Image 1 (spheres, rainbow, N blue to C red):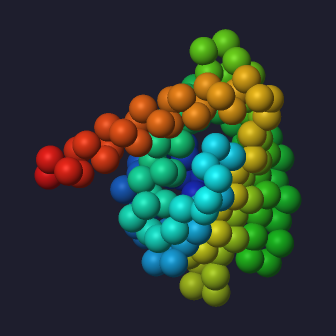
Image 2 (cartoon, helix red, strand yellow; image 1 turned 90 degrees about the vertical axis):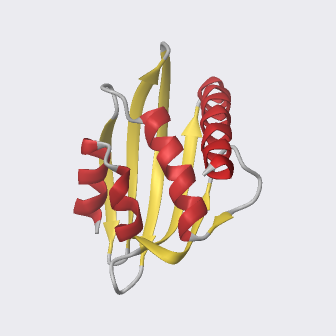
Length: 131
């Protein structure tokens, strides 16, 4: 599962999300006060996150692994602002992601990410309404 995640981030191919997310997946975002639930909604949020974070400077710097989980420390730069954070990923016996938690620092980075992702999610929701 983790190899698929890394491949998706590297290629920015969000079409892989339905394959690697469990139907009951839950996302814990650093900018949303409540968990996001379900494959469709989590897929939409992760797509927005990928488009926000995964630029040419994005790297996973460290990995901490367990049998059904990983903590991936990442860094990137967005509009001259250094972003450091972690993705905490838990998967089930079938290798599908069931829980995804993101933590980001510093505060300036969180505010920028919130602004960018809010705009992208508004676009996605508008596209769904017109489809």
